[in-house]
Amino acid sequence: MMFEYCKLEIFIPESHLKLLRETLIQCDAGHIGNYDACMSYSHVIGTWRPLNGTKPYIGTEGAISEEPEIKAEVTCKVSDVDSIIEAVKKIHPYEEPVINAIPLMRTGL
Image (cartoon, rainbow, N blue to C red; front, side, top):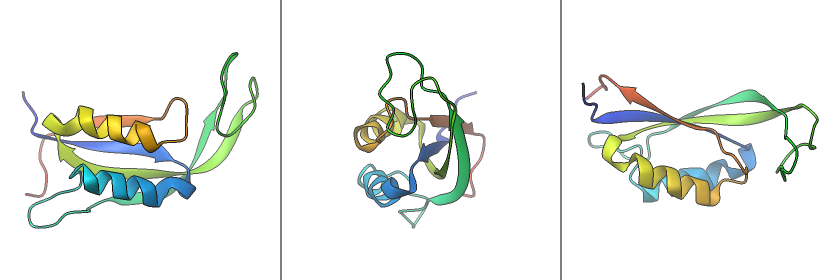
């Protein structure tokens, strides 16, 4: 089955939320019908452990970090996923940003 739309889940520090929103708008992510800039976000707690040789934005190599983050969710066309993810990576402060692309069987359209 081919999917036309997917949902991106992007985990990012709250300090970068406005920049993320602007980047997504520039990429036309969150364009649903006659609306654009459609995005939702929630506050979450993320955990991770930077391994040897890393340069974490937050945390210390070898120690488990637990920090507040934002989980942003936006719908986009599958055909645009790669370019949107590349744009997000350019403004994301993490070495290894968590960006999940989830196919959507159906949207509210």
